[in-house]
Image (cartoon, rainbow, N blue to C red; front, side, top):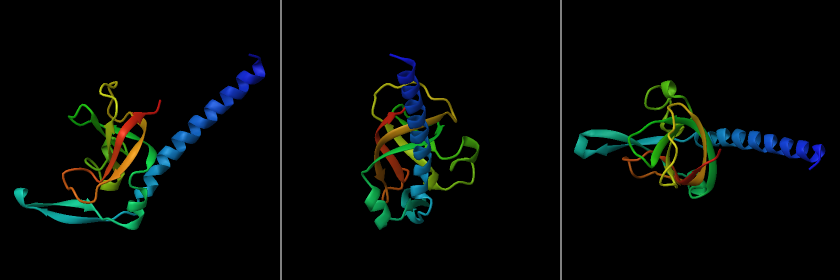
Length: 147
């Protein structure tokens, strides 16, 4: 293969990688204006927040998306939490809202170990949870790591 073809393929690869990551980070903007409601949790004598159901969420529920964020470790093997922000600023530790975290349900039974705050990109099917307080509001099912 001559040098012109190699340069063309390298340029296309770099451009497509940059484009994919940029779009994946902007995916968080789909959720920035969402609102939440409190629901009573009788067994804990407490309240929890659930994302409000609306036309926008119904229109994107079930669609294929790509999202990029920071890994927040949890105790499940096949589930991770991806955050728009690093651990120090995430929903659990900082002042961010629930619309800035997503549960990632990884399709592969075995996957490599992810470090806290490692920036990762996943693609999968979006599930919007507006009813169950036990789960986060945004879930990516059958998620595949984009490397």
